[in-house]
Image 1 (cartoon, rainbow, N blue to C red):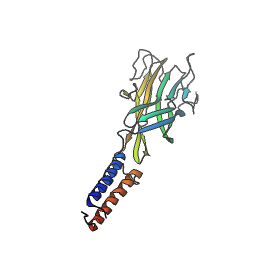
Image 2: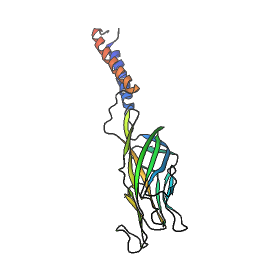
Image 3: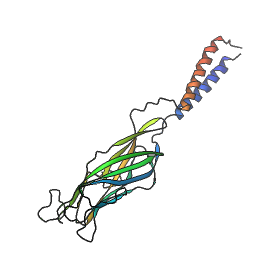
Length: 249
């Protein structure tokens, strides 16, 4: 027969083991993710038939009025493999606007950026539209957004709302949020447009972060959690059986 002291000791071991297992299932403060194959390509150029570079990361438009060449947009993505932690801002790439004089009637009015990346090997895609405001470069006719002393500045507006995508890792829901463009790498200097002087360039970083969703119901228990339930159930069963045991002196 099982002595009562031995039973208590056995129950203590089971309870301690279950406690250790339950503790091990608690999520870490920040989860880690690997981003790879980050690409940004241009398409749907509007307002002109004179353009090139669609389906690449550099799009150009217009008939150049000088030897400087065409105006355009570049998107240079971050390194092909990026390790990030949930809750922290990180950079997906850099957007650059190149502004050069063009002949009238050949300027673009819009273009789309197709952005894609793999998060832990799963592909996610986004699409963003940019409005292009090419000016006449005639002194006295510059628009109200003019900043420089050179007639006339051009403007790029980021017209699409920035979206997010949801995915799972280890039974928890996470969202990849595109926070928008920032002058600085930390994402703390947001911009909603470029105003670029003639013969100059403007740049900003596309900043994102991964956040844990508030609703994180896990439908299937983790193996360690299931083991803890079994151990606790075993302890309960042995406790009930102990009522039939007699203390042996």
